[in-house]
Length: 73
Image (cartoon, rainbow, N blue to C red; front, top):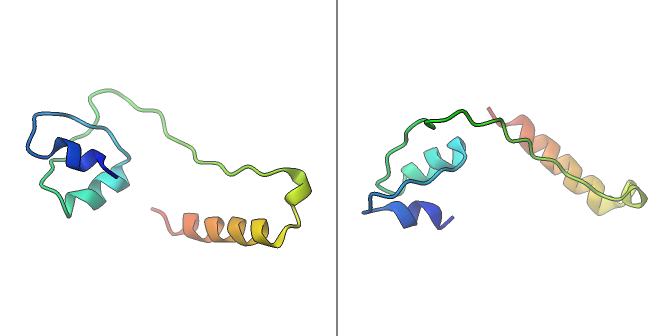
């Protein structure tokens, strides 16, 4: 992401997912602060046409996404 780079050395602010911010804080000299306003949770979804329900590639991708999402905090 280019966003952390855009704020380094400036007085700019940027908002991003907390997990991303924590990741980038390991590599860039940025400060992390809580949002000053409440933010609704963001829900990620996957969508495909019903005709592709048995498509091996779609099945593989859904499985991969499911497995990875279970590893999230």
